[in-house]
Length: 293
Image (cartoon, rainbow, N blue to C red; front, side):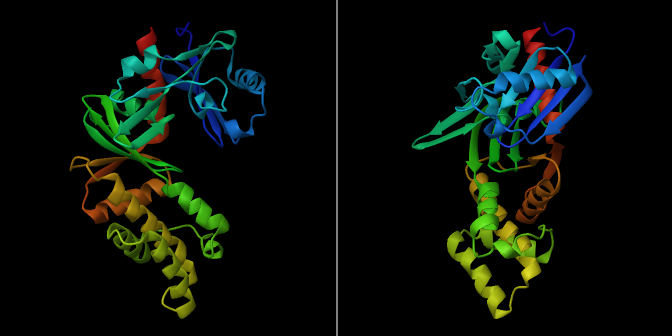
């Protein structure tokens, strides 16, 4: 089934990306904002047909929220520790569509539970392609930042921090929203925010202090976004590395947010390097297909 190529789809909450892959190489691709929340009930077959109209009549390998509750077809959460072979053997088939959905991953630590969808494909791909070692601590910035520990090529544990979503809520609804339209930049105010977040004080109190400082003239309006971003990322780092091994951190993603996390980790004294998230995802789908061949 896979010898003539396939279509890899990263179908998220708010967007989707798709690539036509042959012999491990991308031939064509597209991206749009049709995430699974934008697909009406019963609308997935038509949208899958649209993907094939654009990229060809090939089998689909899909990861992300397409397999979540409320997505197309539910795919289970596989418990950690998890390896690539188990992930590939647990694909959920949609026979009438020649489509396969990658399961998510779960981790339970006492009373704390955690889940992910889509990132697991990137993590296994990064290891398979040599973008990181088989033993690695990965930071995956985004709406819900993931801190994942790979040991011997297996995903053994992870922790999610809602940093990106918190920033979005503040930007949309909080007293600070009018000052958060400016893009955050690494620099003095970002660094000050990181330091404050790393101290582990009361985050909600520190957020209100931002407004007070602007009103009292000790913080410029155009510096608020950088400070708040640093504050949230600093708190994220403090939570994310707790209980994780020392050493280098792999920052996976692309763009400005990845660079901000890298800068914060450097300030925190943790060596790090950045890995392109798209390259890791495609390496993950290729590695999954190899398991099936």
